[in-house]
Image (tube, rainbow over all chains, first blue to last red; front, side, top):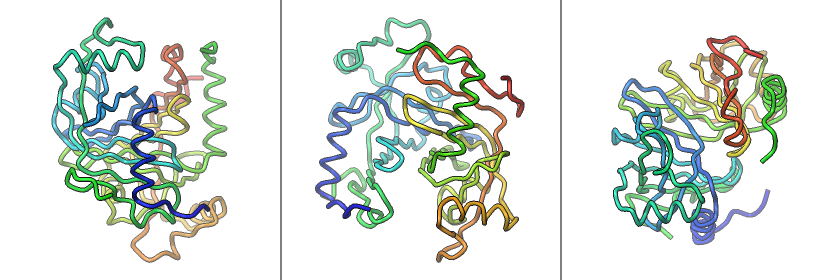
Length: 145
Length: 145
């Protein structure tokens, strides 16, 4: 097991992944208390995780409700967890930036695709069990490191 | 993009991963409709995904309630999704098998660790978008391939 990273290093690694990774895990819930999970392509726009999915899909319905959403970034042994709530994205500039990253424009798809921004209020990052101390990088929307 | 795999191949790949992988993503929900996600070490015992986590943790509380649970196996671009509900595991043989796999015995930890078995009733597996057709491998608890 490697030495645990500093919080500063973890924040840097996390922001690096948010810039360069293609997909994230999106964990949502319905009002009956059923969990759901889906990998989705994303864009980090500096303030939140942007994803696009049909409004009528399970994830789309769950994101629309305003419940807590958890985003898993990275791998099972090099993980960043982002907690927040989703808001629908209206501006075309953000949608264009998503298209520029992925070469895929949900606006041109059949189906009721919408864009959502998940704005983090808590961020945690760890690799192995020795990084559980100090895993919280953001609390109440403010970076700790 | 590679040619899409047959359902038989996907089932074989899925069972291979369940035998050899170490960790899975566990997506759960609370009764207020908040999603949660955590990577946990697991054991596949032939009927379900066995995990261990403190009863008082968010995941432990959510698993205890009997809501739908979604297990993500594999990587973002080579994924198996297992839907089911969790039941608590009582028998020591299963707990011993978990310890044999991981070299870690939650019974010896501080905290109120419990074991849960998530029994799948639906299984889906896909790599890229061309594998979305035919992604369902199990429905209502029965393998389709």
